[in-house]
Length: 239
Ligand code: SF4
Image 1 (cartoon, rainbow, N blue to C red):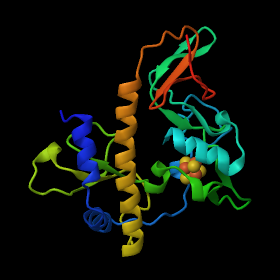
Image 2: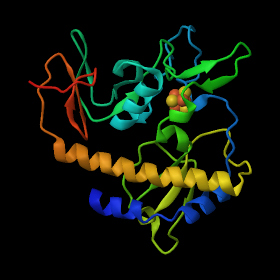
Image 3: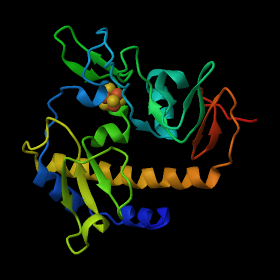
Image 4: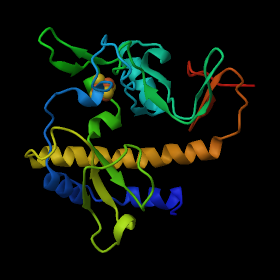
């Protein structure tokens, strides 16, 4: 397994032009279906046992601050603890987690997603949306590590000399906009944001690793991010 530092070096060395070539090869145009901003397929208000999992999209600490500043929002209006790693205690979720997720509304959709009367969706913080939103449905796979966005439906190797999982790849994830023509300017803009995201994800992971001190959050939730241990409202956690 590559170290995080070696992967960060790989990410910093990514060629934007090669990434843009790979994006063009797969093709993409946003159809504004809203699927990447919403919970699963069951519409809000429908009952049944198949209630969708709430939307989960990673947001970095400085992106949370940017979003707060964009709309004069409180921390919890913008972000919530990523639920992975938490368990249900007597009074609600508890445990330690290592990321923030964009806040969700009562339907499980991203809190910043809104539909007009005709049902057309839009992001209400488009200019300030996090890198994960700017780059969906793509991700960069480095050095055979596990990827944050689940299984890929298409992949292009950026490193044809390398074998199998060791190759640096552009992965594409489920999205109805895949396979559509994309112009070069848009492909390069996406490629630049993807490189920035790959670097930022690794810097964040290194920061989390280096700042981690086990907490003992009985009946509470603690989020360990690259700036230390925090409570769900973003304030510092002290035992
Ligand atoms: S911030 Fe905007 S683009 Fe990102 S998931 Fe929310 S509504 Fe969608």
